Image (tube, rainbow, N blue to C red; front, top):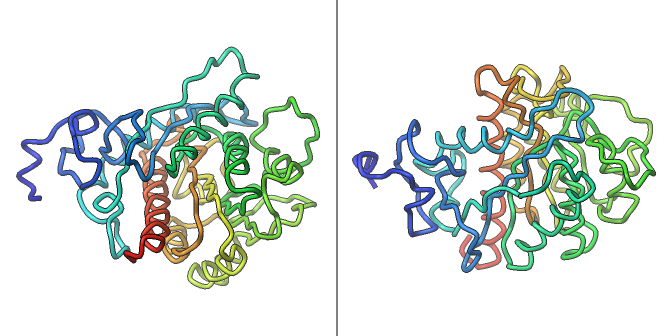
Length: 325
């Protein structure tokens, strides 16, 4: 498809018929679905679905991530022209991907949000669709993991983050983006022996048995060797990948609620995400993009790239299962 298609394509999020294929639609116009995929609630024949969770009521510092899904979608319009760099195939060409839209919930009934999100993800998994979720604050991963544990049993968690999010919290009614993985481990949603947190640079006395590769180790070891270590820890266990954008240093991702210096570079993250190809990934999310603090749009751009890499990782697994790798 040549560049001349840019003069013919518009609103591909609404008008496109084929769920596969790249697009030349102008970045500056048209409806902004993720990667110009078709907005659809029809899961028939769908391999992967991108969905937004505009929730930021669990933050400990700056709010604003409820606008993250919208910003990430807009930033993703820079990407759907050709194969993602560094891969030998294009997930957009080979797989049926839709934008499933956002989770609907009543912001004034906070207690209803967690089960609504679990049900939302359960619907996708029961249809055989791999979800990629755009957050939202990091609490959202906890209700998501409940749906995954129902489907696959205790999950391996691959978490890129500045914070462990395993601080003690035994109150079942608390909704907090810094304690949800404590609950996930305690409830058996996550197997800590097969889980790893990457980029950590805040103190937590008890990591609950989860493997930690802190930011300094990544800087010293390098991203290639770190990716090998990640793969060794995960093995072939069903894995959920959660990427908190504050895993990146604020120099690369300033638009987030709890920035911490000394973090990963975008280049390190890109290498690691590509080099872990082959893990048994079942879905993932990118969270904590807060556009109000994203003065250049760089954070949303990073979030869009992370989500695309997650799609590519899922595509790698599906290709291997289908014998097309």
